[in-house]
Length: 124
Image (cartoon, rainbow, N blue to C red; front, side):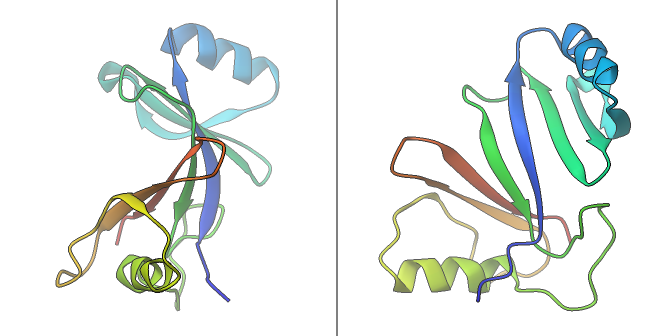
């Protein structure tokens, strides 16, 4: 079974400050981010959302191999390159790919049948 890592939804927001204020009213707290660079990651329990102003067009499902839901490193995980190879072997079309010869951080994007982008983004 594929281990995709931590899950979050990445929202393409129009006004970062307004979105932050709204989600804080729902109990979300800042986990990380840089408001001057127009992005934040907020958390409520094990639920994680990213707010990104002007960085991409559509909301995105995001998976982070190598992290648990608290962005803590996992001892063992499926590398992004292995995940990509497994999907390609199943004839899944990728919108963008990670360099298969590299190591460490990397990402790829695929689109589900309804047009929803999915980012698989490894940070370590």
